[in-house]
Length: 269
Image 1 (cartoon, one colour):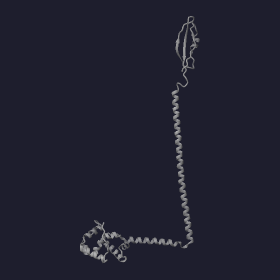
Image 2 (cartoon, helix red, strand yellow; image 1 turned 120 degrees about the vertical axis):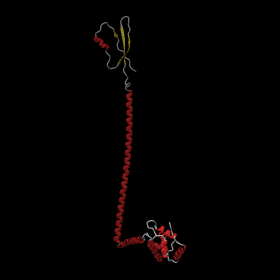
Image 3 (cartoon, one colour; image 1 turned 90 degrees about the vertical axis):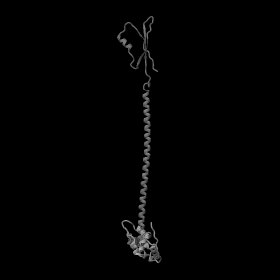
């Protein structure tokens, strides 16, 4: 609450000097003053005028309350932001440490494996060198293995050479004769096909073309010729099979039973 302060009573004298009037009318410079009430009282003996001056001195902290609250809020926000930043910093440090530890472990594993591989290779080399120095006949199985691989490669190359692809009816007839000669020696069609390098199914697809040429060449000439650019060999074989007569079919079957032809059945896709 503001404190009220009354200042002196002033007597109305008929004559006063200007200096004294100024001294009496001066207000104290320290506090803000406000004239609250003016009372004029008259006594019987003396004419007195009472001047009541109210001095209002503001209490400390009353005017600056709002500004202090704003400053407190700012300080609280700053403290919270600092705390969150510290927490984020600690979290980032932990993640960096974890990642660095993982990378170091991986590098260690790679180094360990490389050292193990190098030691094992050196051990194997030393063992092989010692065994070769101890036994002079150790090179013999290696030579045998190499020769065995060479024979396998040679057999494969031979089979690929023999397995020439038939593109015309004349090629079909040559291939059929080769398989038939091998069949006479081996006694089975599968072995004969393996020896010549022909698949049994492909042979069965085009066997009719060769059989008609071997049994009745004139009838084969009556069949429309093979169109190389328009049809395939198995399509031409289908046309040959469809053009067979009953008499020719019976002749082919008898030749198969007498082993003059391959005992193979027709297979079409």
